[in-house]
Length: 313
Length: 283
Image (tube, rainbow over all chains, first blue to last red; front, side, top):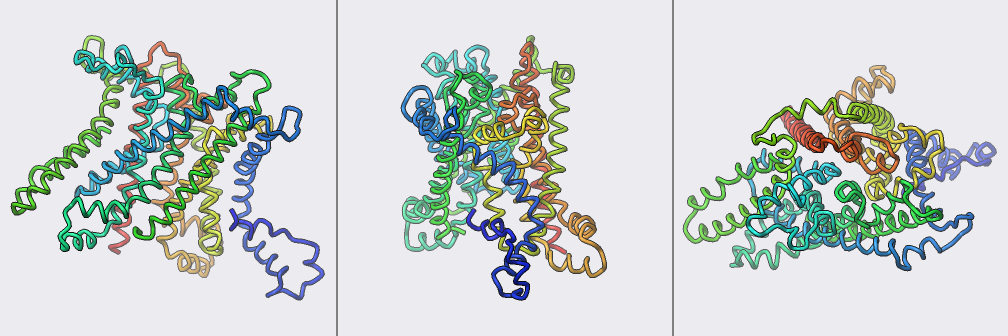
């Protein structure tokens, strides 16, 4: 956003008319010129400020506003102190960590297996499929998994029952934490494959050849060359997965009918009016906290990415 | 997902045939690894195909066994489906028109005259991806004026923001591949105005970028659930979730069709991009 300031602070002031001669090199002349140059992007900027900037500012302001309109810490305090909203946050964070690490590792393996494939059509189809699943899964995933894994009449459940492997008999539920985590893999793993595949493409054959010529085994190549080069990329991608798992709403809402107590679901419940009076401001505090966590996540991602590009480009 | 299964079938020969072509010590090492790779892909494919198969079987299987396409004919008559489809279509059209009018001239101008601003555009257009839609909807519903708050078109206004990341990236890479300056100078010196330069010179050259931008926008509008749900408008995904459940098979079927259609169209777009870039390299 700092880059932006060059342009959007440039408002014409009264000095312009009184000092027309300074033109080319002068500060005011430059200001006017830069304003004139940037005029065509003003519709875009105005739209973004009105439809994205204002709502975001409202969240930040209202997170610190009491019902009477004064500044207060009490909304933030309420969600941090304990109770259902604190618990919701903890569940959300746990869900995001689990669905970042496990699909992160599995997705790396799948991306590796795919990267060695020679079939162009196969790669194209898998990457398009991964793109769809990573971004457009949403509600549809809930229906797929209910059809497959519901306690009664779930097709996979019926397959597993005669084998004594019915997960519902072993304390698992599709509509509780581990069930939701299981469904999240369906969009997290493709997301990991999408973002880690370029890193595998960046491993240069020359490195492997050099290692092989020096007598390194496959294991030693991966241990001392491949993995150290890939680690920042893998960790960075896991941060993105964390963000995606943390902010997911559609799948959890549709799968559990809003019964799992994670932060996005709690915000949704407040917005739809299923809330004790006087708690509306909590929604802003929750939304604000989510945005802060997401920003921190993105900062980690950017830092790790910078490290990644040292070797891979 | 069915395509993933298809893909693993394609990949299979390499896991069994190739080792025999190599000499002995290498063969042993490679074969082991290939089996590992094959196993990873098969397990992954199973995880992705099985729920999909389950949903298809659930919605298309007859109680007596065997499959039937008859549930397809029930979709149109399902209560509320057509009005949800109409709402989603309206929103998609409005979103697409607004986002294109807003982004196409801006991105072209930034490429031509304000290259320094590209970095800022990148940061701005990544924001809708960083801010969680559920958090964003809190701010939108509070800050929208009440006449807009009660209108379904608020969703289209918001979807323009959500579509910006996709549209910007498509356009940015599309323009990056053109010799923009030469095209514009040629067109301008032949006497055409800005609008006709954009419409008759640049748009045809950006066809594939505009195509993928529009498809992604449509996919986004037809798939967006969060904001539509908390704003209580029954778009297609909200209908799938909330529709009267006297026949959940129809909901599941619509969900699968939506996912499959997105998949097929995006695969086509990716292929189109490939063949286009191959053409331009050849010429």
